[in-house]
Length: 360
Image (cartoon, helix red, strand yellow):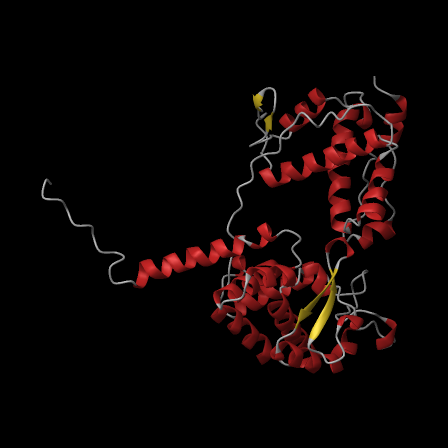
């Protein structure tokens, strides 16, 4: 029948409407994961490790899902064993997942999550059970016997310099407050390579006094200074007099800290989702495939175009806010692939058929 406490936990409603609205999601009930230690673990992630809100929410979803699956089998989340975790991952359709002892895992006919998704779920499990061990709540870590899935790192989608220029020109042609804001967003993103969450959440205080750079608070609360190009600075200062257009009626400009405020967002600033929609529409208007355009693709374009023009990898790493230079090195592969393509298409000898030997 299972633990009565777990059954009671499963009936609990989800976070209230205010929290659901803050997350930008419908107010749907979310059953509890059946563990009294989950909230403590999530609070630790935020307070001690500086985890971003998106990371916390992803881990909460992953562990809640695992907790509900275990609860259906009468097992609390904190008491799961290695075999239970293995069975859960198999149930999820663990493509690419392998157990240290038993070799390849099996799939149960369900749509398999990507290796990256499996890796995130496993990371959530590992950190949660390590937390329980460190807090003296259990003696062993049931996730320690499981290997991470192999993750192929796909080359990022890239826009050409001409395509970025076309999008900026299209936005400039719009005019008005909406057009000026979009130009500022594009120019700042292309000049700095900010993560979209960093861009839309920029405070007014991020702008340096001379307007030639930004102080950005990135992952883990780490600050970095990124320079702005002259076009980005000009676009930013052209937009600022129209910033009040995006405020809630009756609100003073000084009442909101955000550089890109929003009348409709519960966060008080332009949302990532809305900015992505604006970019898709702009791509269509610029005769560019909208499927290849997103805020993150513009971040990729920033890095790749810098390397194309001779920037050193360490400088690009610092501007992107990557903790590990290996993350930045993916862009060198993009540049290498493009150079090989150029050589193949334009070198006079590249496509010449190899000479046959006399023996043939």
